[in-house]
Structures are given as structure tokens and as C-alpha cells.
Image 1 (cartoon, rainbow, N blue to C red):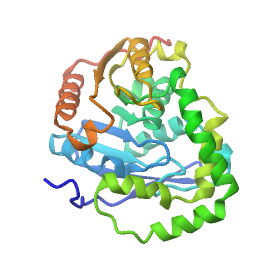
Image 2 (image 1 turned 45 degrees about the vertical axis):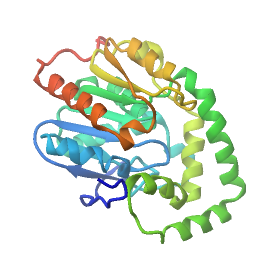
Image 3 (image 1 turned 120 degrees about the vertical axis):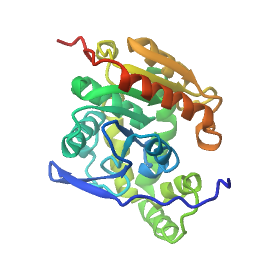
Image 4 (image 1 turned 180 degrees about the horizontal axis):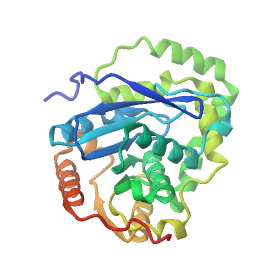
Length: 284
């Protein structure tokens, strides 16, 4: 199968929370709900290969756009953005969907948002799927990438706006190619607000909060990724009492040769949905 095939998307839906519109797409149906959240300055299209596969295997897959991303509202005020706010937004999505319980997962930013939701609403989370979480080891590397990017956006918003306007006319082909182009298509003022807001807030729940979580968790780490050090994935798996660590061969495996990781994920989901309900946190 060509990696350049066009993928049909379900329509973008939305709801309002705290006066702002949050968009999402829904694949499949049924009681087994899994929410997958995208990475920083990306959108829900990063799951246009994984989500349909999970839907075909009986899962209801929800792929939101976090505030400032994709089809969601994009305020230019940095105070609108924080990891804890993203966690609250995800909780509001569960309320909107009337999902009493869901598996919560994500990549990079999305993994950290999943942790925020699990800490804030542990009883609504059936299990966690965390790809490339960013903890203490990754903060310096992430800063080395995103602080210069924020500076470039701050100094050259007009030029970045011109690039965004031009790239919006490039037709969509394959989700991997689109992920790169979508970065250039973004509203530069919104991107700057997102980066500023996250820079001045916490990146992840602190270790004492993480260690209270008892959810089953599948943590996926990638070797040789400086922005998402494997050590952060390993630390996450050690912090979470119910976690197991899965090592991807590279950051590209799940995008270009996904069968092994897809099978691991589906086996994990079958396990957590057939296991009896247990307490999700020892916070009480």
C-alpha cells in the first residue's frame, strides 16, 4: 500500500467549553472509548491511520484538537494555554460525549495531557496510552527547540503569516506529509501564544501526583529522540504503578511500519476492557 494514499476523514465536530470551541473527530462506535490527543502544534489528523484501524477492531475513537490547534478556537492570549487547562478541556470532552470512562492516550503533548486528566479525574480514566511523554529529562531539550521557535515567531509574524497563507493552498495527500505542511499552515500568533503559555506553566504532573495513579498504562518510548528522551518514557513507566514500557524501534515505526505496535496496543486495550474495574488512584 502506498504511503501517499489519501485518507478520508470523518467530519469535524465541536462543542463549547468556557466560551471556547473545541473540535474533535469520531471514528467507530460502541462502549470502548479511546481518546487520542495529538502532539504540540499538530492536530487530530496525526491519527488518520491509527484511528480507523482501532475503529475497525471495535473501538470508539475520539481525536480532539486541543485549544489553539486544528479546528478548535485559537485565542492569541497566552493565558488561555496550559497543560492543566488542556486536561480540563479533555475532561469537558468526556462530559460532552457522555463517556463515563475512557482509555486516554496521546503523543508528546497529548501524553502529558492524558496524565493531567488522569490526575484530575482518575475515575473517568480506564487506562493510559502514553507515547513519548515529556518529563524532567526532556524539558531542556524541548526548550532548546521551542524557545528559538517562539522567538522566530515573535520577530517575524508577518513573514510566517505569509507562509501560512501560501501553504494553505497545498492539497492534502498523506497524513505524514500533511503533518509537516500543517505546521507551516498554522496561525503564527496562535502558535506563539501556545508556546508562551506552555513555557510558563508546568510541563507534566509532579512525580508525587504521578505515583498516585494506579491505572493500567502502556508507555511507548523511542530511542535516539533528543526532544523525547527514552529516559522520560522509562521514568513514566516506573512512576505509574500499573504501567508497562514498550520500546519502539524509532519515532518512525508507528508511522511507516505500524503493525507490531498496533498489535501491542490492541492487545493492551482488549486486556484493560475485559479486566474488572479497579480503583484508579490512591489519592483518597
